Length: 436
Image (cartoon, rainbow, N blue to C red; front, top):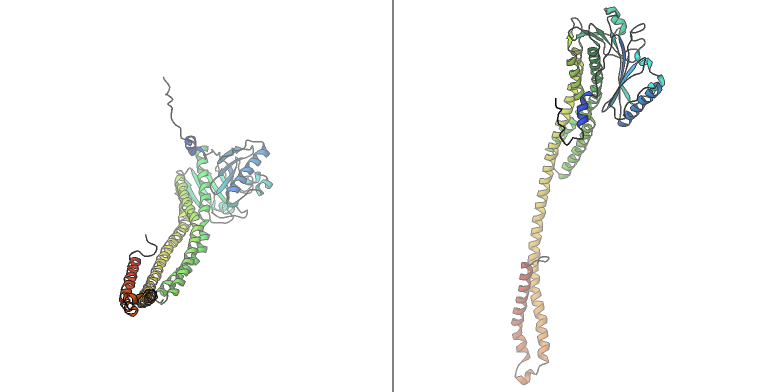
C-alpha cells in the first residue's frame, strides 16, 4: 500500500502547540484506596516562576526528572507518593497522591505529610484551596455516626455519581487541621474512571473557591455605590435650582470626581468579576461531567452549589450592572450640566458681542466726526502753504491779488483733501489690514 504523499505545505508556527493543547492537562489513573492532598495558591507572575523553581528543587532532592521550563502540567512518581503540579493564569495547584488506605482514623495522616516541612513553608503565593481527599474501596464505615466523626460533627452532604458507581461525602468546610475534606467511595469504578472523577471533583472545589474571591469585594463596594447613587440623586435635584454659571461648574466638578471614583471601582473589579463568571461556568461544567445523583435525605453537591455559589455570582453580576448603569447616568448628568453651561456661555457671548457692536458703531460715528475735522485741519494747513507760496510770487506785476487767489483756493483744497481721504478710506475698507 502506497504511503501518503508529503506535500510542501507552509506550516503555521503554532500548529504543534494547537495539537498538544488538549493533552497538556491529562487525567491520571487512580487506584483504590488512595489518599490525596490538594493545594491551590493565587500567585503573580513572579510567584508562578518561584513555584516552578520549588518543584524543580523538590525533584532535585528526590533525584527524579524535573519539569520542562515551559511546562504547565507536571506529573511525577516520587516512590512513596506522586505529585501533580499545574500552572494556570493566576494560580498554581499541587496535588500529592499516596496509593494506600488511611492509617488510623481517616484524615489523621494525610498525603501532604509526606512532603518536607521546610519545602512546604517556602511555597509562594496565597493559599486559597487546601483539602484532603480519600478514595475509599468500601473499607471505611459510612454510617452517620462514623461520618460525623470523620467530618468533626459538621453536616455532611452525600450524593452518588456515575449511576451509583461512586458516592461523595463532604461538608464544604474547613476542619481542625485547616483543610477541607472529601471522601469518594468506589463502588465499582476502574482506575481510569476514578482518576477522571477525582480530578473533576478537585477542580470543582478549586474553581468554587476562586469564584468566591470576588464576593467580599462586592460586599465592600456595595455600600459605596449606594452613597454614590445618593450623591448623584442630590446633584440632579440641585440642577433646576441653579441660577449661576459658577454653581453649574461646581456641580460639574463634583460629577467629574464621582465619575473618577466609579471608574476606579470598575477598573479594580472588572477582571475579578469576569474571572468569577468563568470559574462559575467551570464549576457547573465539572458538576455536569460527574453525573451526580441525589440521595434521599441528603443535600447534594449540585443543590449546595445552587444555593450558595449561584447567589454569589448573581451578587457580583448585579453589582457590575449597577456600576455600568451608574456610569451612564453620571455621563448623562454631566452632558446635561455641560449643555447648561454652554448655553449660559453663549448667552454671555451674545451679550458681549452686542455691547461690542454698539461700541463699534459709536467708534465709527466718532471716527466720521474726527474725519471731518481732519479734512478741515489738513485743508487749513494746505491753504497756509499756498499762501506762503503766493507770497513769493510777483502777483502785482501779473495783476493778481494774493487774498483773492488764497480765497479761491480754499474750496479747491477742501475738495482735493476730501477726495483723497475718501479714496484712502474706501481702499482700507475694500482691502482690510492683513489681507492681500
